[in-house]
Amino acid sequence: MDYTPRWQKSTFSDGGEGDTCIELCASPSDIRLRESDTPATHLRTTPTPLAGFLHHIKADGFHTTR
Image 1 (cartoon, rainbow, N blue to C red):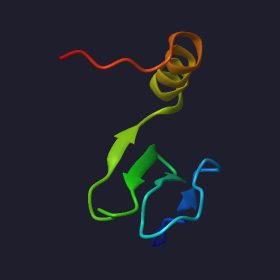
Image 2: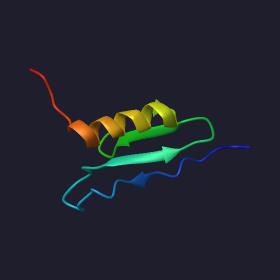
Image 3: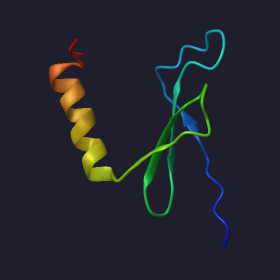
Image 4: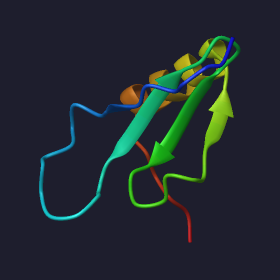
C-alpha cells in the first residue's frame, strides 16, 4: 500500500504573501515537519520528542544564542 502524505498548515499561518508557514504530516511511522517554502526538505521525528520540544517552547519560549 502506498502512503500519500497529507500536509496540514500551522494554525499560526496568517495567510500572508508567499509560503511562510510550517506544515505537519503524521505518517504511519513518524511525524514530519516542513517549511512551506522548501517542501522537499522534511524533519522527521516521533510523538515523544516532538511533545517535549513543544512543551519546552511553550514553557520557556524559544531563545536563540549568538
